[in-house]
Length: 234
Image (cartoon, rainbow, N blue to C red):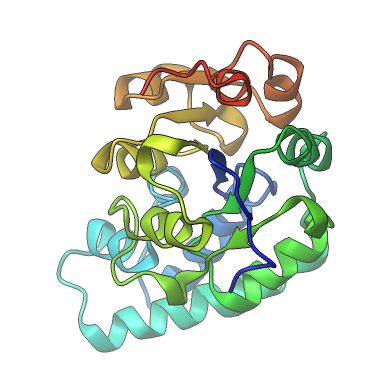
């Protein structure tokens, strides 16, 4: 679903949501851990966390290669059920609304390139409380293949009416960086999702900041600042 539309905005910023704008990565890891345990699978929490940001289907396949289709559906349902119990505990990272507003006020189209389930995304959008700064958003319904495939980024670009050369993507996971690279979108990575700067840079992140507040503090000198002034190299 999209908002009223970005109008004639020529450049934009795509934002991942979980782990980037919302402090939810570890809740997702816990939800997957409990889902696996319900199916009699003892998967280490650290192994799960390193895969958060992948689509659920790929996360499961990576951890349980011989998983049947029926078990995969049970695991997804279990994760969804457990994660919903954490909704009241979710919070935005510091300065998220100010970051989104700064991008929008500078004339950039702002898209939430999320592959979350629609009901989880609605919770996140309510927490963000930044409707006036957001031009478009996506959910898992908008992508055929999940990250690290770039489908969700392409869907968000289509809603904004922009191309890969017109935007920067802000994410927190290696899978975000890989998704951006697949279609030539530079990625600004944040470590607040729990992945180290070294790993994010090794994956190809163009810039790395601690969290949304840190990015906001350096916005003018960042790639987003260059988009604002039209000086970002194609």
